[in-house]
Amino acid sequence: MGKIRVLSEQLINQIAAGEIVERPASVVKELVENALDAGAARIDIEVARGGRERITIRDDGEGMSHEDALLAFEHHATSKLRATEDLERIASLGFRGEALPSIAAVSRLALRTAERNAGGAAGGTLVEIHGGVIRDVRPIAWAGGTELVVRDLFFNVPARKKFLRAEATESAHIARTVTHYALAWPAVHFTLLSGTRRVIDVPPVRSLDERIHQLFGDEFLADMISVDAQEGGVRLSGFISGPHQRRASTEAQYFFVNGRMVRDRLLATALSQVYRGIIPGGTYPAVILFVEIPATDIDVNVHPAKTEIRFRQAWQVQTFIRRTLETAIRAHRPFASLADWAAPAEPADTPAGDTPTGETGSAADAVRQRVHEALADFSARPAPPMERRFTFTHGSTGAPDATTASPADRRPETMAPPVPGAAATETGRWRVLGQWRESFIVAVSPDELLVVDQHVAHERVLYEAFRRQLGERAVPRQRLLVPETLELSPAHREELDRAAAGFEIEPFGSGGTVVIKAVPAMASRVEVELLVRDILDRLGDAGASFSIDEVQRRVAAALACHAAVKIHTPLEPEVMQSLVDRLLAAEEPTTCPHGRPVVLRLHIRDVEKGFKRA
Image (cartoon, rainbow, N blue to C red):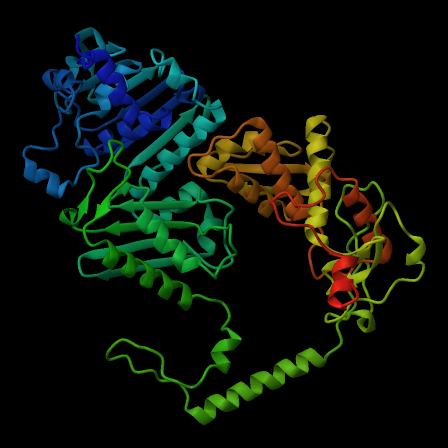
């Protein structure tokens, strides 16, 4: 008997579903695309238990006849293609005819639909399918449009079901998906109800910036740079963040090509090239970018999920995008670089017909001279005394307090002198000698010279302290004198419950607005909004789903980073010794929570070898 056999229809359907239906958000994506292709002006989404238990999507689109309602569940049955040539110019979001049969194969699905002008008494159709098997088809009274109810997703595919994440995680993925389409279709009314909470409710508006305001609030747009350029048949429009607005993940990056949500390497590469050197490594810009291009110049038939595309002229498109973004950022930089003043007086490259109207060489020299004189005068002024910011005692878990060094003691280029009595202060093996550049603690042990980065050392100490508090469920809180109000994106609002340990947070009004009334005690001195947004960004990596322990690790790392003493902060001798003592008591004193080294060590053998004494 041969080894090769034809698979059963049920197994074929489940394999096909595995390519399209990855998680509940995949179902929402496919059904929302169908609704948009049907010309819906309103789309209502309801989910229960993160979409595991139920997903309901209603639209007021054109609906389907009885015949079409049945054909819609046949594989490769679609209203959007007629001939091979149509693949060259796909304008709709869906076209493969695989979504509905694939979803029906792994769930208990009910479809109610009626054509827009044929609703009413017995004018609609009900189709019920369980695990790919039709259970019921009958006429019903239906006003028009379409409703799909998907229950018990993956009930018959336990191997896939066990890979679903926590309800909050799946809800956040759904919120991100709906946010994407709400951005791309501002003229459509979207609502998203997760359990009893209304996560998204955005009535139709006329412009993208109005839709951004609905979803993210005023603050999101405040520091964004508008982009709108066209070259040949390609147009790039939207918003990008300036150099000072950055995120810990790519969660705030939205790419669209011809209204289609995409994850495209070409666009991501162009973006990373533009921001390289502008923002620190490991951080990401926020962008909402739309590419409009003739349908014949892209191939969307790359992956069953339709989130990947190919550009026929990839290099030209990437170059245009990169050049456009670089121009936009350059025009909005808040300060000119000193290198611009010191650069040779050579004409810059300008497009044909654009003649620079800058100053003459002698005038530019005079300006540069005035700038250097002003800088010299500024440098000569004595530094004003710093206010006392930190207190730092043994056993403290708060931010260390540094007293101010007098102007005469501030020596940025040399090590601070040894402190009186420091020789007698020794705990364990390390004794503090002083501070260098107001950023590094210099200490010695019997055989080594040690340089400690004060910021990352304090990060490690605070990180472990907060992890212990979380583990013991005993996080001390500090109530805010003035509660902080934040406007969060729908996805961030869904994730907030996972990240709220130590915080007291309450919803405020509708949408994603919340009020923060208390924060973990060790974060009482930080900017609350920046801390919360950083925590949510760290939890919002695209496609990432974290265990409770990983969530706690990321929250603790963000809190420690914000609360730790910064570099360029003068510290008193007892403060430095206390920090070193607590670092030596840490479980992992060699690296900070992000993996950076805390201490550089120079052994006496290396010193003797350098002086040819070995």
